[in-house]
Length: 164
Image (cartoon, rainbow, N blue to C red):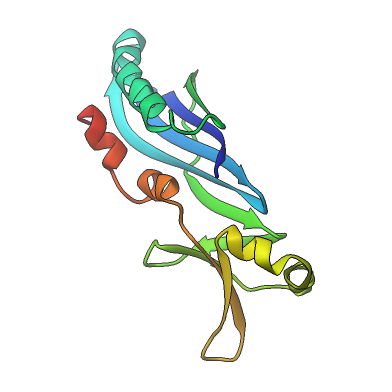
């Protein structure tokens, strides 16, 4: 289960700082690591009051989307600068990358991972991770991208909910 913070950001952007822009950010923790993603969604308005009116519908939609998970806090924040765009996940001291298929995270295991794997193999598997020997003889650790993260990072399903 994901525990974390989903933030709807309204930020001042543009060469002359003439726009207010919408970003979605999700920062979360799982039993074995953490992940984060921030993405640009759309320009909202030139005026802060208009931008906040539009952002409110995104905020309400996000609260509904995460209502099933009491461990996720939903926030609405205003900034005078744009948010950095990123996607990352860390677990077991490894940095994972999203596969081109956008269905799994992957990383090359290190000694610390293998030591933990020997001790907590079943718990790691129950958390959705698995290992696979690759064609070159090396190993990779995988985790399926959770649907909530996939919706945020990959698809525009949240956008469709608010008619963006």
